Length: 314
Image (cartoon, rainbow, N blue to C red; front, side):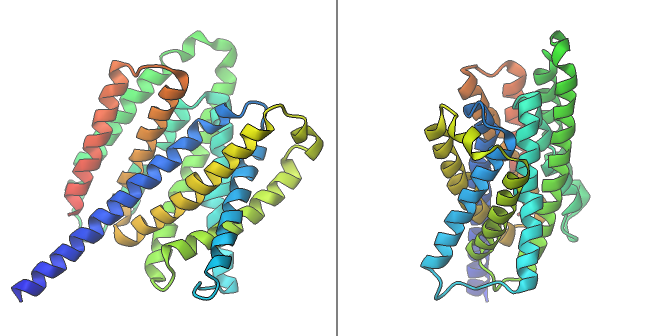
């Protein structure tokens, strides 16, 4: 009995740390989308979103074709669910986020999106976990967000001509936050109800649905073909769309599904903080700036919050 119990404990530990590693890796890949709009000047948020997610769908379709003999194929109902999830967690979310970055820069939308862990932790707490166990992680995360917000907003008052655009960007970032919060909770619940569907298969289904939605979005609101072909940085745009479609969409989706299958919703929510950390890192690297004291302190608090949450869920 002792040996069996020990083996079960080892398996549970491996499952926990595999899920944590997958969640952190997904956060690292997602963090790149905060600087992508600044890497592709002249490209609208609709065009950027469509390019990224059509690439996502193309990679997913290729993966399904290469494994068509063993791949599980969705029912019509499951396909409809995948389409709805693609709007909440992909096309709709990233369109809102990309537009928010255009209006408000990358730092403030990063911070607003950074509150997703708090909402997911609160709404996804396991029944057997006491609220007191979540308090350290929540407090550390909230304190880190407060410090980052103070640091990022310190220069807003000196730019009155951009004030209206800035607050419109804030509104769009809040809408993106609500969209992805709903996605995180519903996605985790669906995966746990359907253990017969693998993390990769679910990512592929959502990828196909996302590509369909992104293509129609581009037809309705995107730039014309002639306008896109007239851009000087076409090669860069194509490279960015393919890279983010493969990495920040397809691979990140698989990794996040793995985390959602192995961890509680509340712990998954805490791991989303890693997206904020990586996004801030990428933003500072892109701008060639060194983080200030408040930003360093916030990063430490974010990291401590993740560690506190992991401890609470062990």
